[in-house]
Length: 419
Ligand code: ADP
Image (cartoon, rainbow, N blue to C red; front, side, top):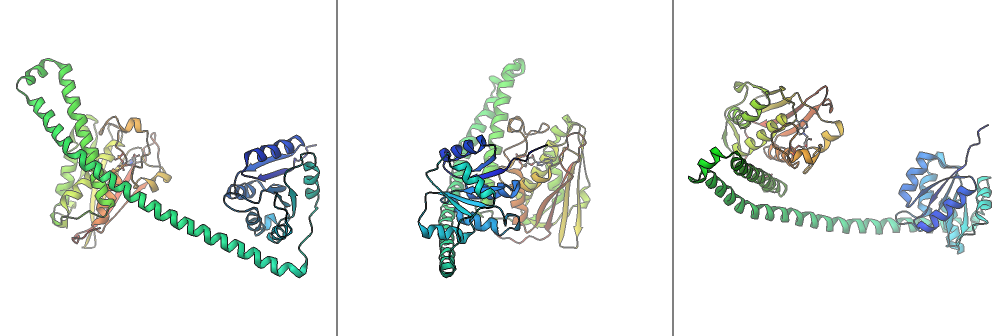
């Protein structure tokens, strides 16, 4: 014969009281669940359907009374004994507790000897006296007022917090913007010096003979270029985020942009034996758009397709007119694909799905990546043109390679406007 253990949920923020009650009840053969605040308690109650709920009244989020009222609104908890464990024993507090739907009261400080008997009493259907009918209306009104007042004060606190968070967020954007701008100038100088070093007449011949020296100089140049890429991404991103993306709209050839974006990665494409297919004639060659920004977006999409497609894979870039005012471009790879959950997050800043260790190794090797700004930038640029960018993928699977398609629509004639 199996004996079903009674399950008791205890909601209490004070750790010492929590563990005292937990141990006492476990010792008497109960299964005990604990929660340190009201919201966690409600979730746990819904999940575990305990036979009895013990709750403190003063908790950091909801009061024990509010927890009870909330649970009582669910028919599942209609008959569940919910008992307050509290030092609040004035008769008006007891009245409020009864009106909220509590079954009874156990007073603190706890009497460990008496607790199991008290629990047994409530489990057996015992309940404390209800408020007498004459005062019921009054007490109900007081309870409603208490709940509304607490709600109002909570909303005020949250609104103040929201204002503070927005201010902090703005400060952070400004900080990033200033830092990135300040880094850009010395980096450009550093890049110039390192190129001079590479071309220096004294050093150049040694580089041919000495592979170690060549590796040092090339490594330095490569790292500086990577730093420039990151800083440029951050600058562009901060312009997009602070609505300062001021499009320079002019006649733009989307086919030329695509060809250039593919060409920019020709080394990686060759080394990784990738096939990139695209038909330039499908792309409009006289759009009104910001050439430089669209090229940045297209490069990011092409470089991602390369990064997440294993060697010997294929990438198809196609375009089709949608009516005569809009073009739809698809960058489809046959790579690892993207998980459903991640598909929602990848357009957010600093969202990466892989291991940053791998990501920081290289810009072009398979799986190598950046800091998770590329797609946020693409989205900002496309939307600033009045277009839309989204992803379609059957999920992530590095074995079966479901691939991903990044699709954007763009008006043929973008207005010159600030986002
Ligand atoms: P990063 O600049 O670091 O590459 P992105 O914003 O471009 O960041 O991409 C964010 C994340 O989206 C990447 O870390 C990667 O996990 C995922 N991702 C982007 N493009 C693809 C793709 N074509 N295939 C699979 N995953 C991709």
